[in-house]
Image (cartoon, rainbow, N blue to C red; front, side, top):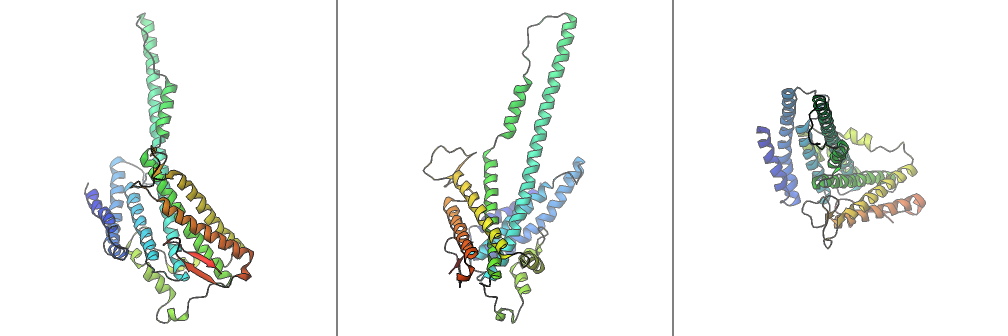
Length: 362
């Protein structure tokens, strides 16, 4: 109970931060929210351990419910923190954006993995509950059959009592387990949106790497390392993440290794980046099928959502803007693969979306 009380204030602060302008939100997040979540993660570990000890559960097979919840909320704030930095222009050049998209790709992948494991554990628990229910019905049927035989031996005649149909009970239980609630649909919609952002980040990092291999992006000027270094710049940009126990902060060496595509042929790199943008576009098309316009009526909230829904993960307008980014970058990648010698200039633009750039080849 005391841990839940401590959890309420940081969660409230994440909502309050949305009321600030973007510059103030970043400062508020670094000053108050990150330290609060760092403390909550430590406390959540103790809560999970106490729960396992109280119920005699194995730490290897029992999920860390409290820790997973806090880590998910932490990564959400971290991912938004990087996104706001891109929006307000803290990463103005391609070499700055490469680090931001690379780190954001890591955060989104971690968030998707944890959300996936939580969903898998939930489904397994629901399957276990279904199995227990069916076993109980089976035991009731066997007990009813034994009682019926005993009555027949004594020669007593009673009116026929309708026995429960086990097949009908099984079908009903399976239908209940497979039923998608409004909350389940909302979670799946958010999971899909996270996949869209991961595809975009991953595709952009590989697109930038392909342009570097083609010699179309000029290297950072030596003046930016006159009083500092690339490593120091990286560490300062993500210094606020160092206070968080989970996920462990990435180092500059991780970035160098993770963004090194020198062993990959340029043709393969262009194809890989194009696949990311095409996959992203396909996911967005599915989103647009379930996020319907405000004019539509009688929407089943377990299958679709209206665009004016307050709790929706993405609006149709933003989805269309992300589609423009995917299409534009895909077209320029095709141009790069067909005629790289005809490209003389690369222009970095944020006209389609404020967080995702298009690298226009001229």
